[in-house]
Amino acid sequence: MSEIKKHWYKEMSVYQIWPRSFCDGNGDGIGDLDGIMSKLDYIKSIGVDVIWFSPLYPSPNADYGYDISDYRNISPDYGNTEQFKVLIDEAHKRGLKIIMDLVVNHTSDEHEWFKQGRADKNSKYHNYYFWREGKGKNPPNNWKSVFEGGAWEYDKDLNEYYLHVFAKKQPDLNMDNPEVRQEVKDIMKYWLDMGVDGFREDVITYISKREGLPNGIPLPVGAGIEHYTNGPHVYEYLKEFKDEVLSKYDCFTVGEAPMMTPKVAKEYITEGDSQVLNLMFHSQHMEADSFLTDWIHVPFSLKKMKKAFSTWQKEMYGTAWNALYIENHDHPRAIDRFGSLKYHKQSAKMLATMYICQSGTPFIYQGQEIGMTNATFNDVNEFKDVLTFNNQRLFKKLGVSDKKFLSMANRCSREQSRTPMQWNSSENGGFTTGTPWFKVNDNYKDINVESQENDPDSVLNFYRKLLKFRKENEIVIYGDYKEHYKSSSDLFVYERNLDGKRMLVICSFTEKPVRFTAPEGFDLEKGRLVLQNYDVIYNSNVFMTKPFEMRVYMFD
Image 1: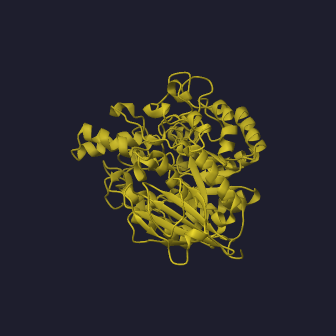
Image 2: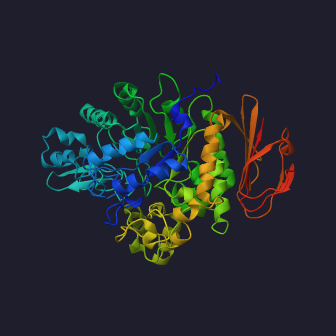
Image 3: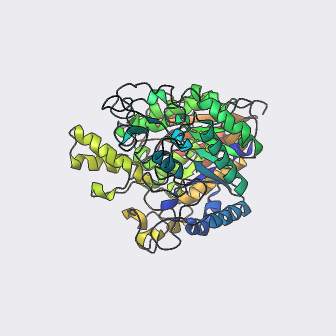
């Protein structure tokens, strides 16, 4: 075990809650802290160790919580700070850690800092953001927002523009200003002192913009992105946060990093004195059915997915630690993308095994553990998200009809992961006794927690079994990784090795039968079949896979 250092954040698994859609405790149609409190025992029962909360802070909800108007409070939609303190205590009593979303690339335009900086050019808060004069009648540069048209918004009273890489109501913070960095450190201390156990840091690799804010490559979306992705001072600022705050707590951090590669990730997460984050979220494996964004759909390529996973496994092993996920609040549901609705249960179990049995800390998104799927929306106006409507405008300019766009949104929108959690077969899936803030998936009577609780063959009970298996077998956490069947478009097969033990993971990504032959050195007849999603009558070194079949063998 000399090559890998053990640590609690490596051995844990994380459950992500998107609070607005998790559980409504007061009947107003919006998920809240009371609802979450009522489900702590359920969360614990899954076998996870940490809850990651998407933003709980006050927000005008231009980007549903990722536009923060007050970093030191809880949104009234969800409750209050005293309730959150009780929630932390109750979670800790159950052995569950809590991590917060830290969103410091931008604030809401309704944050007090921005309001004061906008009201008075001479206010210190004016320099908390990127305010610039235009070039004649044009914005300061050609940057385009990721969410909403141009990246500059004009203020006629000031005769200046402010930068917003995301929505208009999300002005970017000027992290080059030491006072802004001090604010971030104070925010971190505030929540860590309250008892939270770390942070998921939103688009953290965007916080440093290239000096002079030069023009970017003229892309239709995200022009200028090369000037603020892994910008000149990101590492330096994260090191400052680590040295002055995070190192003084037993906490953990995971950074979200769009367009991240293993080589660049290592600059941030290589273990040792230089490390500034524990883990890094990337999206390379999520591009197996898309190009750059989920909205540009291409046929699913298992080879592309395998290459991404295997590259990160190989590059990080013994050097840094992986963050493993297949679902979160920014992507449609995984079964619709990579599995099969026809073979719902089998593909849900296969996908879970495929990623959770790799080396890294697994993240599970609410509803994933019961196999929630994409909903069917009948009208674009049923959607809520600024990104969906921005894409509607963009695709309309490209000649895409409203009917075609609705079909795209049903497949590609990240809002598919934001439909309310399906707790039981009662009205609204048991999410609320009121009118839900967002559409509940029509399949809630078939797919819900209650119906799966007492079914030993359910997706939920498989997740429990899988996470228990991971906890009880160090090979799943600390073993090395080697891929087999690299050229297969249907099978994802890999082995893990640790201290003389071996594990073989076999996953089929197709409903058609595929001939599987055990890799050289493996005798399945002598192995123990420890996880499967079909009854296996006898082990053989050669067999035909069933639709979306999965098997895990252990060899002592």
